[in-house]
Structure formats: structure tokens, C-alpha cells
Length: 230
Length: 365
Image (cartoon, rainbow over all chains, first blue to last red; front, top):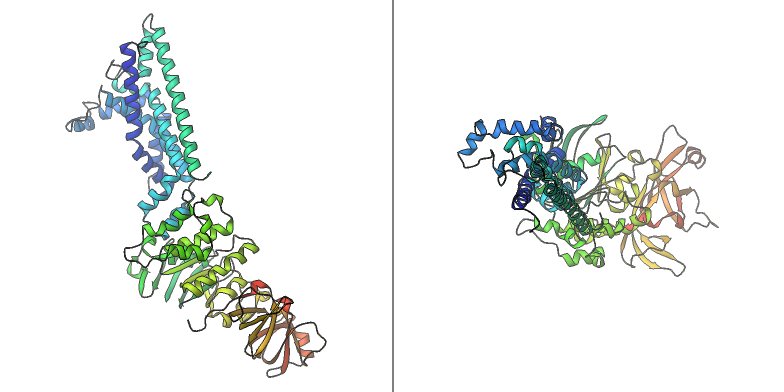
């Protein structure tokens, strides 16, 4: 990739790393939350639902600042986690956390919709055939919601690639550490003569986004075919 | 033996009943909204009633008085639902074997090939449910329930979603479950024709209560408990198929009386159960002559029952068994019928539909 400068290349690689981690690590939590919201009745369900969706409607800067207050080195939770070697402030892990929080509502929405489309009567049928709730989920529900899970992961990944406000507020804009693709574009636009570098990164952004979309389409179609034309 | 006692408030009434289901097929018979599905779902463990106890062959499935509730996946019951509920992402073969993954080690395994042959689904094994017809789906669902090695089969109106032709296609398979595999079954239905074909014993439900319980012939002889109305009332006769005649009739022997029916599919020698609707029976004081009807049974009036309506239900003793005739009160008076009056019951052959004839329930089983 000789046409990319080292700083630009760094930003691209970091963004990919941050986004992949953000979308994959949140996946189990996303599936669990989506299942709970779709299938279970419990007190405080609306509160959980609201909390999950909050990053979608809050200004990203506010989310970033709240993350800083919670996970910053001076904050209680941040200091506590630091004892176990988990540090988020001004590190790529912080960027991944911010991206994960921002992408979470999109992931949960997509998976929840697909769970709600699966007839709970199928899980009942699995139960009468001897499958406990865990195995009924693994053998019946999970394969049926695979397209929804793929859509959720791709959405979260794309959101993570584009995340800017919360990231820059929480972990700043340090090249090589926390300077993701959008932060880099922003930085290049702030200096004279940076337009061409910015434009190259914009091109990469568009290509990655399109690639993700096409990949999700292909995977979803293949999954649908496997389900016998559902 | 299945022992059921339940209490559960439902829309507009309270389910409050207890009954025992002997071996064979016990049909929960009632109109829609009688609480049948609530009963079967409580037995399956899909819905927890307010209170009650269910035990199968001495094994307690739940006893809410003692806080005992076995979750559905540990009850070992095969449930055949109204809408097949096949898993769309699995092939027919994988659907059939689904229950086997979870069956306890050492459970008696039904032989896959035997069930597949019995249900005639060998050619469908690699297909997905989306490529099956309604009748095929239901046959696969039957096989799937059987292959999970259940102690009892539950069936909730498994034919209700099918058209008449498909019903005729599936009913014989349920008869074979009853007669060949001898699987105990709790079967929910609102169709008198189905009940007449399948039931060993019948539990009639109305508004959440057991209105009547007994063997099929007894219950069908009592038009007052017919949830589908008096038109469905009729007698069940057991008869042996003697021969097929070349003119398309089948001759049966019922207690020494010959019955002629439109050709049935069974082989001569097989035991059949024939349902004769009360409204299809004509009474005559003298043996009629020059009459087109082929079945004329010498009879004796056992009982006449009438209400405020124009109709009267006459119960008759014949050599073939008890026959019911629904006539008008006016005719009953004109014929001077009373208990003990000898008369003749006349049934047109063509009035007996093929769906009214099925394999008989072995009497002592």
C-alpha cells in the first residue's frame, strides 16, 4: 500500500482492529440482550431497553464524556479495572469500547427483530422433544436468526468504522494509539495540504462500507438458502 | 394410565376437571373454547395451571400442591401440534431424529426405518419442510413425535388445519399408531367423525368441565353430550368385513346382521368400526319391501327421548349393537313407539360415508 502514508495506513489498520474487536466481543452480549428483550418479561425491561438504545439518541460527545467519567483513570470503575491490567483511557482498547457502546443498539435491534420473527412455538416443539431451553436455543433459534446476527454484526462493524464523536471525546486523537479513520480524516482536514490524504481515507471508508454491505448480503442470502427459502 | 386433575381460570370460565385416561386413545372432545387445549398444554408442561396434578403411569409430571413441576423437556411426551411445527432449517430426516439427540440413554428406540415406512415418508427424507404439502408435514410431525420415544403422545387437533382429502389421508396413520404401535395417546378434537374413528375412550368437555366420560360407543350413544350438536350423534358398530362385491359394495357382518357399505379399502376379515348417524336412520314398524335401502336391521325400542323441539331420539337394540335413530315426535306418535316396540331400522348404504368407517379398536386392549 505504497500510496498510503504510514500515518494513514496506521489509521486504517487501527480502525479495522478497533471495529473487529468492538463488533465481535459485543456479539454474545448482543445476542443475550436481544433474546431477553424479545422473549422475557421482567421488571425493569423498559429501563434496560432504554439504556441499550441511549447511545443511539444521545449526542456522541455526551456518550464519550460519560465513558470518560466511568472508565477514566480517575474514575472508580476505571481505577478498579486498571488493577487487572485493563486500561481504556487514551488507548486503542478505549476506542474499541466507545465503538462497541455506539454500535450495540444497532446490533441488538437487528438481532431482536430476527428473534421476534422466529415463532416461539418452535422452541416449545423442541422442548416437547426433550431439548432444554439452552439446547432449544442452540439447535432451533440460533440457526434461524443467523441472518439477523450477521446483519447485526455488520451494522455494528460499520458503525464502529465511522464512530467519531464518542471516540475522540473519550480517548482523544493520538496517532498510532487512538487515531481511527474518521479521526485521521478530521486531523488531515485541519492542516493545509491535507486534503489529498483525507480524500484517500474517504475512499477507503467508502470501500470498506460497501464491502461490508455486500458481504452481509451474500452471507444472508446463503443462510436463507440453507433454510430452504425462508 | 394418565391421571389428570386441573384448575385454571380461563377467559369467561374456569377449567376445573379431573379424569383418568386408560390405555389406548383418549379423546378430549369439545367445542371450541371448551378448554381442551389448556388441558393438553398443562399435561405437556407448556402452560402452568393454577393448581392441579398430573401423573403418567405413576410418574408425577406436576403436583402444584407440593410445588412439583417437571419442565416440558423432561416429561418424555410426544406432542403433535395442529400446525406441524417442523423446524424449517432442518431436513425431514433431521427433524425426525431431533428428539433422539435428547432422549435419555437406554430409552427404547423406535426404529427409524420402520416409522418412515409406516408413514410413507421415505422419499421426503432429504427435503426441507418448505417443500412439503400440508399432509406430508403432518406425517413427518407424527414421526418426529414417535421417534422421541415418548411415554404418551399428545395430539392437539392435528387434522384441523387440513382439508377433507388430507384428513382422510392422515387419519389411517393415527389408527395405525393405535392398533400397530399401541402408543397411548391423548387426542384433542372437536370433530365427531374423527372421534368416532379414533377414540378408545372419550372425555367430553364443556366450559372447562368434564361433561361425560366413557368408552366411545357409550358416549356417542348419548346425543345430549355431543358438543357439535345433535346432527353428529350416532351409533358406533363393530363389524367384520366379509367380502367386496363386484358392484362396488362391501359386505360386513355385525353380530350376525349383514351391512352393505360403499366399498371400503380394508381387506376381508378385518375388524371395522362403522358410525351410523342417527339422522340417517329411518324406522318402520313392518319389514319394508320394495325399498331401495339395503340395510334393514330388526330392532327393538329401548328408549325414546324428546325435548321441546320437533325431534325425538330413539335408542334401538339390534343384534349389531345399539343403533340410534333421530325421527320427529310426530312420527314416533304415528308409529306408536314405546319401550319394547319391535321395529326395523333402515339405513341407506350410501348414507355411510367412507370417513365413517375405520379400523376397529381392539376391544380388550
